[in-house]
Amino acid sequence: MKLYTKEQVANIHDQTFAYLIVEAADNVLTITLNRERKKNALHPQLVNELAYSLHYAHFEKSIWAIVIQAKGNVFCAGADLKAMAGIIEPNNSTIPKPNGEMLMGELFNKVYKPTIGKVTGDVYAGGFFFLAGCNIVVAQDDVKFGLPEVKRGIYPFQVMAALLKVMPARKVIDWCIRGYNLSVQAAERYGLVSEVTDAANIDATVDKIIAELKQNSPSAIRYGLEAYDHIQPSAAEHKYLYDMLNKTIATKDGQEGLRAFREKRKPNWSGE
Image (cartoon, rainbow, N blue to C red):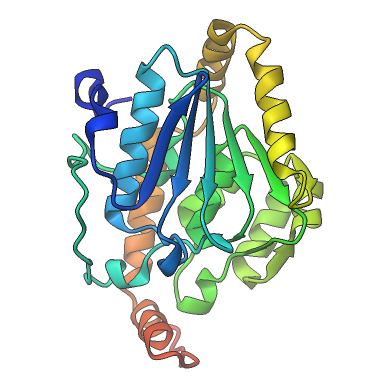
């Protein structure tokens, strides 16, 4: 973990978070996406706060597991398209800028602590970094998943790479190029979701998994997850995918798709 040092994250509980709620208790760090009015879209500072929290979990020996959840009926709507267009809303976050380039596809890889995604709302686009990055995903039975990027004139390059870690390649490609919604039951069948439960039982399901993890050696788990990281795509590959996204955004279709989204109309594609 190189975006923040151990010293930088040591005072996490004295920091002000604009878009997350971060709580540590009983060897578990709970990270709650707290941008409900914007459907928890990935504002640049939200990503900084997430990276900061995950670095803390990595360095802090008392943290044995991580739970990621979200407020509202949308777990994450993906990238903040207004922010991608350069419209950045102000915030009161005290989390510093990272020490290097931020790549969402890399954030979860080197935490080396078991991470549980508790999904109680719909997930779209870049929100799948959370699901693909978590080791275990428990999802509510009424949520849905969508990859609408191609309908906006862009393509989920890094998300595609992340999904290929947990889903069959043919299904990932089909989903990326057609841009449809996927039911949570189908997501479980294809390996994106570990367990499906209803709203009344999701807390108990996550608590049961945490209790099982705590019975095992945190050191053995940490080294096992580190070994798994060594056989995954490199940072250079994620950098290439990030550059491809920027290249696609710069096309005429990419700009038209973003304009159409902002103007709430259908895009007029040119193929350029």
